[in-house]
Image 1 (cartoon, rainbow, N blue to C red):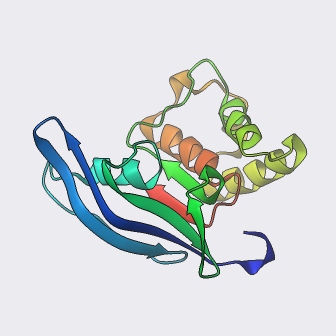
Image 2: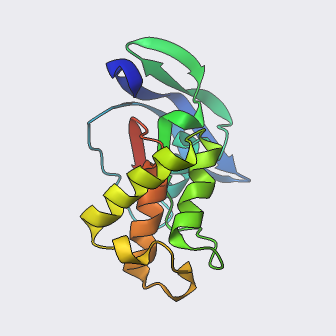
Length: 163
């Protein structure tokens, strides 16, 4: 975040059903920047649905999801405040690691030069700097995860959601 603003992702009385299945029922939670929260539960408990609601991929049937910046509600969550690493990496296999990351950085308004520097810095820390210009098709699962993590962080979101 620029300007040192702190962010809190809030869910207020959020519910989501799929037909007769109540995946999430009346959940209220505040997730603060720099905090760590783990969702633990069995298969079908609603963990992924809850994450999809938080990341605005799904809309709740009831309740609302907002983000607060420095304690002020900004209304519906702008995706620029979120980095999301889904269970499946969602990488385009024909694109290189850098091209996948650049595509998402452009969606968030990050200039290519800035994005490339950030990308190279993260890749160096993750030990994959030499792999940025390779197509992701042949990547191991770990390489795909690292690439997807860099993609989620490229725009420096204050909140990161990992599935």
